[in-house]
Image (cartoon, rainbow, N blue to C red; front, side, top):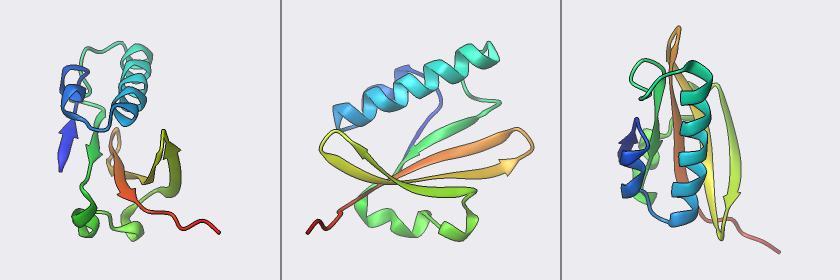
Length: 97
């Protein structure tokens, strides 16, 4: 599990397409709230395939499947307080016919 609260921490995100996607979202949030980090707003959480237990669908505000680059992610937002939330990404395989 990787928790990201600023642009520098996105350097640890792989693959590169997911890194760019999250960096863009972080930049937008920091501009919107006029902050340098997301410490008081929330964080982005990138899970590994085997960390599915950390993605409790019943605790999410919403859940969707995102295609970013050549990969698919189960994406959800978990609200932890009045002004704090986690934006969570879990890699998944999608079966196509």
